[in-house]
Image 1 (cartoon, rainbow, N blue to C red):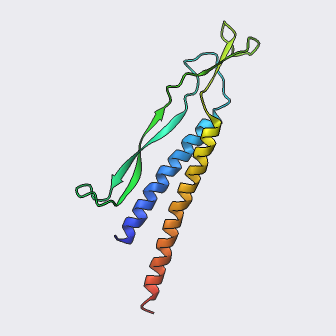
Image 2: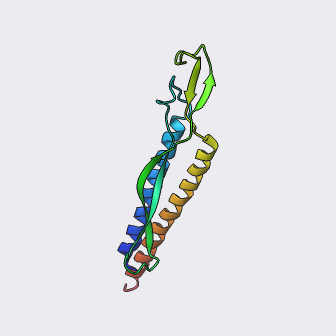
Image 3: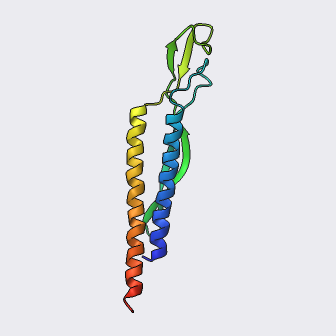
Length: 137
């Protein structure tokens, strides 16, 4: 495996984790939003990952991950009875997104760890490259 492959694989994983972190941030930012209609409520989003093999024909195990899609949740919105709210519908209900903030925070921590792991791979590859270049001196 060449250094370019290591950089490409770790870079792909970093990109995927960045997309994942962006979707988490979007979900958390919209968790407290409300609307007067279940049709216009924010729907949480999640990235869909797919393994990308370095050698598609032989599948040698050298692979990274790629984001193929961003999917929207089909979970029903949270319905709250608040007749005095300015956004309440004719029956007095407002609708909040079905965002589980605790689950999002756990995902955020996991994403952060995965990102750190990939940074460590890049740092180790850099250190090994520098040591290899210094062997001849």
